[in-house]
Image: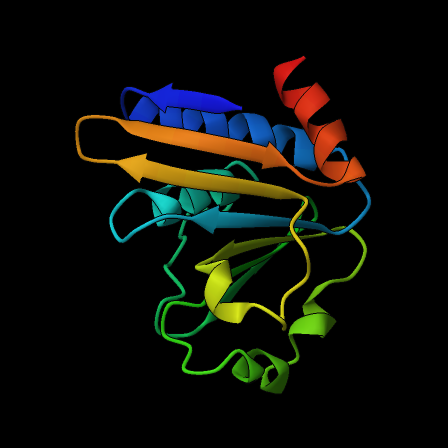
Length: 152
């Protein structure tokens, strides 16, 4: 599915739509955020996470992972940009982060290949300040159920 996001509000609407559907599932869900620097991966993640009631959402660029937990969600936001080897994810116990009712947002998933779970949803962002394009792939049975919820 290809979308043109004309402004920040449309990015927010997309993130919240997918988050709303993810809030209804009980399985772990992995979302890849793919794209060059500055295309809005972290912005998308922030809108997604804020949907669940978290006000302060930090970029995990320097910490590798930021975790957000409350009575509505258990979210792990990964940024693999600074990985020198995918095995570093094994050292932090990445597989332990994937329990039932957890959501993983993974930026730069190609840098963690071999150590991260397969995506249920892949969102590839491109564009510039004026507009963004989002290519969304719903890659698993779970992902396809989220697509039905988000798009109808």
